[in-house]
Amino acid sequence: MPLSTNSRCLGLVAAMPQEVAALRARIPALKKERAGRLNLYRGEFAGAAIVLVESGMGPAHAGEATGELIRLASPAAILNYGFGGGVVPGLKVGDLVLAERVMTIGKGGAIEAPSPAPRLTQVVAGAPSPQGMPFKAGTFLTAAAIMNKQDVGALYCAGLGNPVLEMETAAVLGTAARSGVPVVAIRGISDAAEEELGFSIEEFCDADLNLRIPRVLACVVKRPWIIPQLLRLSANTNRAGKLLAEGVERALRVLAEELSRN
Image 1 (cartoon, rainbow, N blue to C red):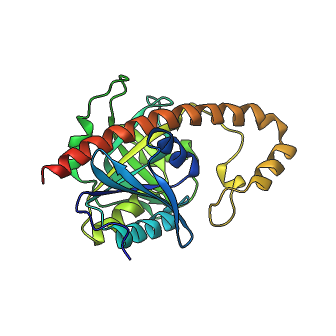
Image 2: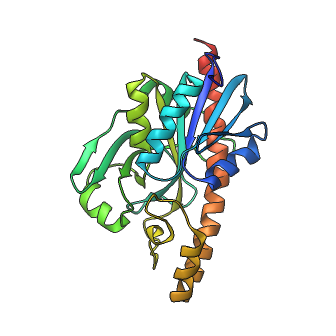
């Protein structure tokens, strides 16, 4: 049974629990449910029905979760949001980047993904920013697997403005495009291009890109010198999460207003 038949329903897709928790801190009306393997959150905001799905990391999870969101909620539009990495110097921790273009990258090179909805993206870009954190236009690079930022910068980023490395947006766009649902995508920068890490996030995950605490602990035991890096990354992610949630709230408000006009 669909969760909502409201034509003013806005769907959201976020990969990680931290991304969801930061938004729920600002919009506590979002109540948790389950839909199969997925955590689902629904409520109302700015007069619109809101349905948020926590997809898990990676394009396969994101595509599956987007399909389930569309099946259950029939949203008028989808906002995909989450953390991302700066690939070339310029973006700093906490910056908010709005996708104008998205590409899938991997061993086969770079493949253009369906475009984010131009009109809705423009609406979000114009949202007032009380904290002085306007959205920056950029290109999202969706990696099929965890990739090194330096390699990505060298291979794919020539001529791109504000490239951001992430792992879900192209899959969200592809699934949504097949159902004719427009998508807007926002990333908050959790690690800048200059940030050098002595570990890969892949080391902390299982084969399905699920974060596993025993793997984190095993890496720390083997390489205790990464502890300061982990603490710094945690602090950066916390800061980026708060700013990202504020940006998503802004985006939801103007998208809800836009839907009310149609």
